[in-house]
Image (cartoon, one colour):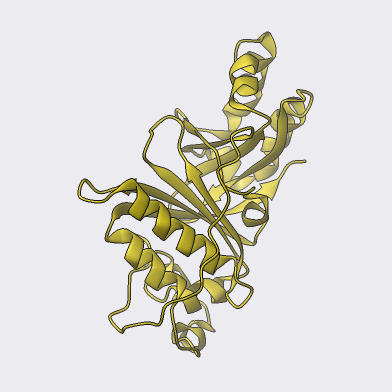
Length: 245
């Protein structure tokens, strides 16, 4: 569950609405159980990505282990959905899968996302949060999108501990969305989301108590995720990613 809404009332923020989704680029987001070998040594991913880089349809590539569970997260920026689909029909794709196999211990679950703005800043951050958003039956798409716009606009404000954020519709499941948020540090996440999913993981940090209580007033990232949770089912995971470019 993503960090929840606080009960205190908060002032409205000025929101800049993101642009229309970039339909040309298709970002592949894939999860799979991580192999023991990958958990011990993430550098075993290099051969697969070095091989994939030879194909000019694949641009930016990121990989890492989910903090909550031993899963691999792979994110690849394809020049288009058609480019990825064309690559899957080539003999080179099978060789790529063979190189990828040592990293995973089960089947991958890939989807494609047309982000409103490139998520590369969030993916390069020290901590990357991925939120899966499925609107509730009594919520309209326009309401959910308006809240996503507000959430991402807040996250991209330099006052917060967020480096960058973006969202976009999932191609395979129309009406659902993925949000990517790049946090500058564990402390920044705890400050904005004191009851978030990483709460227990941070209890062991010596500085946790100091940063558990926010030193500012007003709306927070957690408040806006709580607002979104009233209109959609929201689940989130966190990873520390490596860029392979």
